[in-house]
Image (cartoon, rainbow over all chains, first blue to last red; front, top):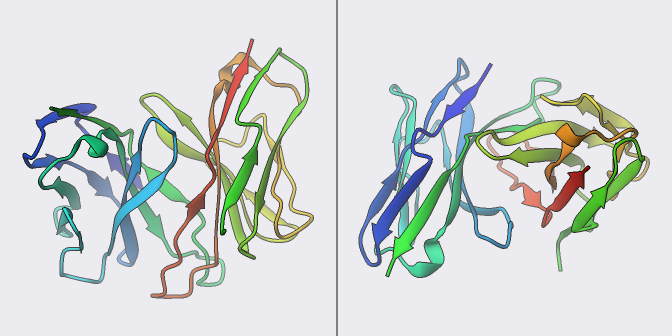
Length: 120
Length: 116
């Protein structure tokens, strides 16, 4: 079974500084996706960034970037120039293509989350 | 506006009183799913549906039922709620993925359920 591990329950960073959130996963699949979701106090689940396993290039979205190490099964999120609005719970998640008919995202497997605090 | 709508946003009930949490999407998505979020456990899948009349269990289906009679709706039913079902619930939907063609998962805004 696939598992996703976030070993940092809480992190804090000074505003404008850089912070890295860790995520490791376990899978025997070769074709999968990895995601980082942000959950602010409003409870919305907001997709921050995704990475396709077959792509060697690390995904980047503005101030957010990932360090994807497929062999090590590691997927960390780097937030540059941290802003007060980045304060949230961050979830790492793993998803695979369906087995029934090669279609479908049957489920995402989530980590337990990292609560990020931004210090003004 | 494309969205997944869950109702109610908050619900307090008593043990054993049947309840339904509704979920509706306006994006013509085939795939819909329910998750529950608990502190220290992240989000775990309860049930999912690949299309109308096609549903299957996720990781934590015990105590829950679902139905998919229409493509847009995917209600979550708790026939006899218990305190261990106190949680934050999310409905989500997406188009079915084609190989190498990613389709994002859209989440509703969550339902906070308290069972006393």
